[in-house]
Length: 288
Image (cartoon, rainbow, N blue to C red; front, side, top):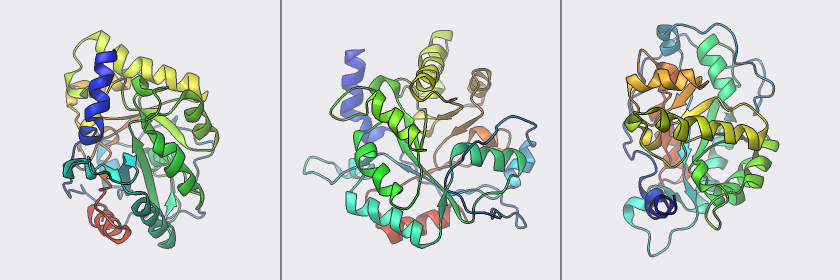
């Protein structure tokens, strides 16, 4: 485990997710609206039980913009050009959040998105989802407080191997605190092992079952969502997620799958090279 974690610490900020920033947006129904009667930034008590729409209906619903962040810190001389795609300078991150707020966006959480996609439930006007991968400490010290200035909430997809690994990763207490403050903590595997490589029962226990259970123990809340490492997924493994109580999963910028749209929800990586205006334009273009 020590060897695994050492390798993770060295490469994770460079390759934590797929750097592919394709602009595929899937099928959008022209007459579908995201606008709700009320504006709300938190999920509250949202039930995820009940009938689910068929895949074609889900594909026909307009996509919600979802941004994926990793490290939020200023660049150093040691950061490579590739690494900088995953490292958002603090001032740039603040620009991103401010332009969303000033443009009238309201953050939503996975339960709200699930109920919209699966059942057609209404969402706040101009919804957006802010997601954070890999358990980095700056997500707690910088990202969460900045979002909260605007009443925003985020989703933190964590690798459970990294919990309580100072100085770069969050502790159990910090994760519990984020949950208490209205953010969501969800699974991003144990050690970022590729989802497409899970072959044995032991893989599923280590990478999905144990992380899910630990998150539920930390937060005292159900954990029903999953983010694919590197954004990679395959059809044959999706039924294994379903067996383990995962009701939706998040990829990256690839096209949604028309057979499994709830398990191929699109996100785009927010590049460290993007100003607030650049991010906004990229988001609008990718999710139009």
